[in-house]
Image (cartoon, rainbow, N blue to C red; front, side):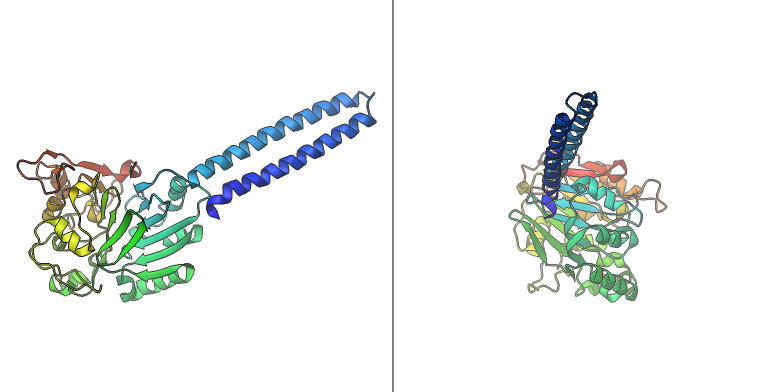
Length: 380
C-alpha cells in the first residue's frame, strides 16, 4: 500500500480536476447565455481562462510530484549505504527486491529520519529489518525516532540488551512500540533477504566467550556487538564495535570458540584461510572471485581497539569504510589503524583470484571511504 500512495494521490487529484473542469464549463455556458450582450461576458471569459490555466499548472505540478515520489518509492538505488550520522554508526542495505535492512540508527539528534527519507523518498515509510548491534547511544540513539516515523517489520538485537537492567528496560520499550517481531540474534543464524542476497550473523555468542575474554572485558557492550555479513554481488562485513579479540577468532587458526547456540556445534580447527572459516560459520562455501568487492566497515569507528592486523590481512578487503564524526573527542580514527590501512602492508587480491594474495598474485591498493564526506554508497 505504501508504494502505491503516489499513484493513489495522483488519481484523487485527477478526479478533482475533472470535476472542476465540468463545473467551470457549466458556469461559463450559463454565464454566456444570461449575459450574451453584456460587457461582463468578456470579464467572465478572461476570469475562466485564468482559472483554467492555473488549474492546469497546479495539476501538472501535483502529477510530477506524484510521479517523482513513485519513482523514488520504486527506486533503482539498490545497494549498500553507510550514512553520515557524525560520531556514530548507521547503514542501510536495499536488496534487488526492494527490501530494506537498517543496521543501527546513529546517535540522538543525528537526523537519521531525514537522511533515510532522502534515500528512500518521503512516501516510503517502511523498514523491513532493523539490526541493533549493541545498546551504545551512538548506535541505537535514534531507534525510538525511527519507530515513530516508520513502520518496522523485524527488529534483531544483541542479546546483551536482555542481560543488563538498563538496556533490558530499553528493549522492552522498543518491543512495545514495534508492532512487528523483536528478538535477539546469535552467531550462526541467518536471514534470507532475496533469492541471491543473504545476511549472516558471525557474532555474538554467549557460550565460549569466557575462554578468550576476561570478566572485565565481557562487562563491556562491545564484546557482544552484532557482527554481520551481507552476501550480495559484494561481500559486506559490518563489524559494529567488535574488539580485536573477536576479529582474531574470526581469522584464527585455532578452534572457533564463537560457534554457539545454533544446532551446529561442531568446532573448527586449524583453518588459516578466512574464507574457509566463513564457510564453516555460514554453512555456505565462499570464494573471493564470487564477488565484485570485499567491503569492510571498520570496527569501532577506526579505534585501535579494533582492526586486528591478522584479521584485516586475511580478509584483504577491496574497500574499507570509516564511520566517525569530524574532530570527535575520541580521536577516531586512531593513527595505528590509519597506518595499517594506508601502509604498504595492506593490499587486496585481484577479484580474479580466489585465494589470498601471494608474492606472485596481482595486487592493488584498497580504497578507503569516510562518512565525514557524506554517505558512502556501493550499488550498480
